[in-house]
Amino acid sequence: MLERGRSPDDDARAASPTSRRSLLPGRPRAGALLRDGFLTARAQPVATATAALVVALVTLVTLLTTGRAAATEAAVVESIDAIGTRLVVVTDASGDAGIDPGTVAAVAAMDSVTWAFGLGPAQDVTNAQVGGASPVPMRAVVGDLPTDARITWGRAAGTSDEILIGEHAAPRLRLLDGVGPVTDGARRYAAVGQVTGAGPLSFLSDGAWRPARPDEVADLRFVYVLADSAGAAQEVARSVEALVVAREPRGVDVSVSDGVLRLRDVVAGRLGAASRQTMAAVLGVGLVLVTVTMLGAVAGRRRDFGRRRALGATQSAVVVLVLVQSACAGLAGTAVGACAGLAGLRATGVDWPAPQFVGGVMVLAVLVTLAGSIPPALAAARRDPVRILRVP
Image (cartoon, rainbow, N blue to C red; front, side, top):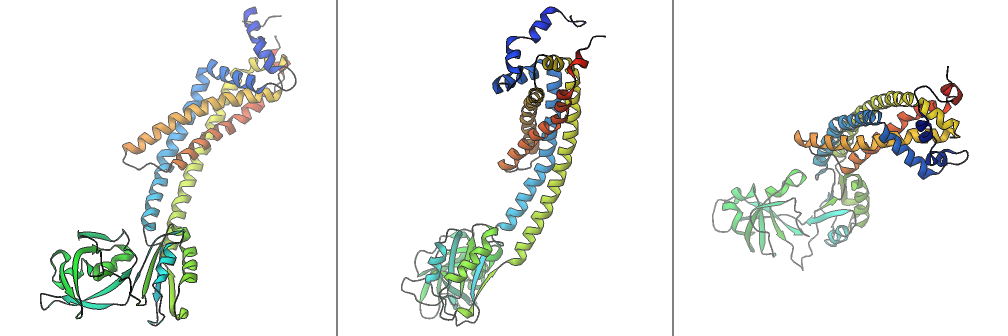
């Protein structure tokens, strides 16, 4: 008996060899199920496009809200991490600890260290040509000054007879742009450039700095070490403490910016919590909308599912068909929403979040689509085909 409003050709197509092969009792072929699901998604453009639009909006809103917050969090944490949270300082607190200069090379060779340099004891230098200039402390530098110390005039000191003058020390020495001769009373040095330090290295702007002589054996007063990341700072500090060579190890103090580390953790934690709450709310709303959309799509196909069940399709096969259709809509919607979200961030002058974050949002959007399709898929699979196909 034919159903009302259907022709024999419709029934023939519904019972085509491809459909029968994929939905016969037993274990259906995965390839046939995927193909049928894709064809179904293409055959129902309205339902598929509606679900894709919902997923695209979810992805777009997530990137414009949570993505913006993630980019802001990354920028704030990066500014905190610049040097302050990663800097480890070794100090000769007693003045008699006798830190060996070889400590710098040993520490700099560590895998988790970006750079390291040491400073010897201070000695005053004055302008060698102009009287009345104020003295400035000069220290020998073991290792290279980091790139965070910016040379604003001249060039870097290449030999132990050349020095760099801090930008605040140059006026006190009455040196134009930090260039000219200075003396410590026993030796003359040529100031060849002016250096500026920022943040924890701001003290470089207040002194004079020369490369240590190869045969210099003076003990170090300070060793500055920069860890590769803020999270590794404490571990680097412990390793440095074990590597320091000194005559009196008890007089050596190894310190990390604990206060800045705590600030970093608080800032990252609060910004991250707000971002996660916003994302959870947006994904929750998207889950509800996808469920409602797929319920409508499944209701419109109830007779099709009834015929498939009558031809021998298993409940799991019906579930797979619905999930494949929703996955097609989810992938298309996620791609469109991600492109629109990134374009919106760029248009508003906000830096893009990390690629890992964007990829995570896209994966979550697709997973939300599949999760929202599970209830409609189970409802379609559990319906009695006899009741669906019954003709009054």
